[in-house]
Length: 151
Ligand code: DAT
Ligand code: MG
Image 1 (cartoon, rainbow, N blue to C red):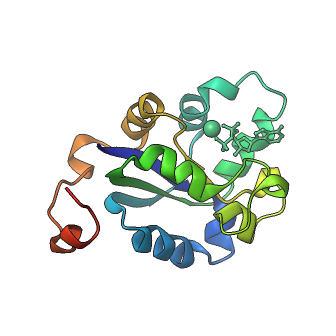
Image 2: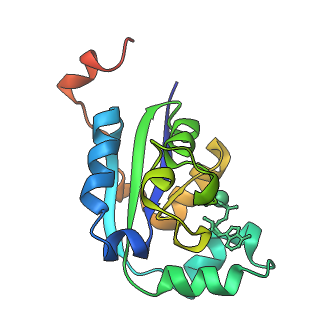
């Protein structure tokens, strides 16, 4: 079933000039970009987005990293895209991430792991509403989808 997920390309991705390569891989996988913008994360957004982590010892460092430079926020649509993007990203700790994943190919440190993807369909709905208004999420046809999606 087609669903949507939130992807964030973290400040390290933008600083390292990896935005194009990562978006290239996402597009080649066949997922549809339905929202995209460059933003600065605020303290308020960090607390909302990482609500499950606010009381953890790593949260202050995580929040200040995420607010340090601009990030890319993307909404992706596709079949089983939430779980599939998690696999595409690789393990949270890049030391454990498989080669072929974003973190496994481009990252070494947990605090510089390049990319965020929603961890469930429920999280995706919640997180997308933090970063995008209804009007910023687009529904549109792609003729090539007949060559990517069976039905
Ligand atoms: P993920 O980003 O894979 O969903 P998460 O939701 O558990 O991972 O954590 C959010 C981010 O917080 C993660 O991408 C990097 C940081 N983080 C998680 N666990 C950490 C830890 N033990 N030490 C430092 N940073 C951590
Ligand atoms: Mg997470």
